[in-house]
Amino acid sequence: MNNLSQIYISIRMNKRNWTIKDIPDLTGKTIIVTGANTGLGFESVKAFARNGANVVMACRSLEKGEVSRKQIIRLYPSSIIQVMQLDLADLKSIRSFAATFRESHAHLDVLLNNAAVMMVPYSVTKDGFESQMGINHLGHFALTRILLDVLKKTPGSRVVNVSSLSHKQGMMDFDNLLFENGKDFSPIKAYGRSKLSNLLFTYELQRFFDLKGIDCMALAAHPGISNTNKPSREESNLLLKIYKLSFSYIIQPPAMGALPEIRASVDPFVKPGEFYGPGGMLELSGYPVPVHPKRSAFDIESAQKLWTISEKLTSVTYE
Ligand SMILES: NC(=O)c1ccc[n+]([C@@H]2O[C@H](COP(=O)([O-])OP(=O)(O)OC[C@H]3O[C@@H](n4cnc5c(N)ncnc54)[C@H](OP(=O)(O)O)[C@@H]3O)[C@@H](O)[C@H]2O)c1
Image 1 (cartoon, rainbow, N blue to C red):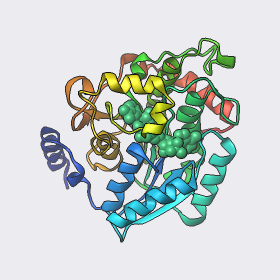
Image 2 (image 1 turned 90 degrees about the vertical axis):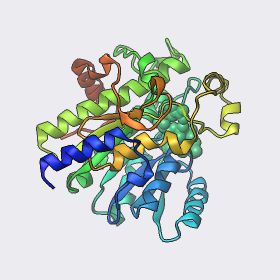
Image 3 (image 1 turned 135 degrees about the horizontal axis):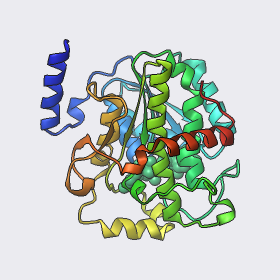
């Protein structure tokens, strides 16, 4: 296909709603989805499996992952899905997940960094990081680095980081990035910072790929607002419940909320460094389109500082 016909098709695709019907055949593609047992991760796995991908569900709990895998197999009996244990709150578990993955896979087409904890009270990961920064940003930062060799070996591979509209409330504070001992902590502040970090990381990762001539794209996505958390999880998280109730008039089902991250992962027409979100009012709902983050998400100095600190904290080096 020449450039002109690619541009033409791309314009047409943006004019109408992008849905799972636009997913190409994914036979032979390998996709890792973190936080795959429920919510948007689960919906993404379903969509990838439906189109023939070889999907690895990276789940904190193998049991929960297996229950979800069986649900998908019932829908698409020929799908190829594996469940592997990954706790993003533990650097040791991240390394062991990557080692297990490598035992059975020589390439990786898409790493979908979807898992997160949202607006939870102050707590720390196994490595002592505030949980939202630790799981949502640092865990995925380390995982991406540790899987870089397989991404490099796969032409046209992608890393997709799932952010949130809450990145707009996020502020970086490099003197106290991890809210040490709860200083200046609030669940909303920490969640916002972690989601802004997802975007700063995405843009810096794309610059890294460009600089090193690596044939891999970094993209980001956000779901608007989607009804994913199970009731039990919301009952124990009043803040999240209030947040979702206040948007209940517009909240979209998980299958819709997952479309931006699915599009960023597999649409052949995406461009490096793009950010996908719902195209409706205030990006709260609707079909996925390229969207723009707040301006500070593009701040190169912040992105470089975050990168350097993240390397130090997680003991990984991008090279
Ligand atoms: N839903 C929304 O309205 C909304 C809005 C903006 C952004 N987002 C973003 O969308 C993404 C998916 O959210 P969701 O709504 O689908 O959330 P969800 O239903 O709460 O699912 C989160 C997933 O992350 C997993 N997870 C949590 N901590 C983990 C850890 N330490 N290691 C590995 N996995 C872990 C969970 O596993 P367990 O089941 O074991 O806990 C679960 O599978 C997140 O990045 C979130 O920030 C969601």
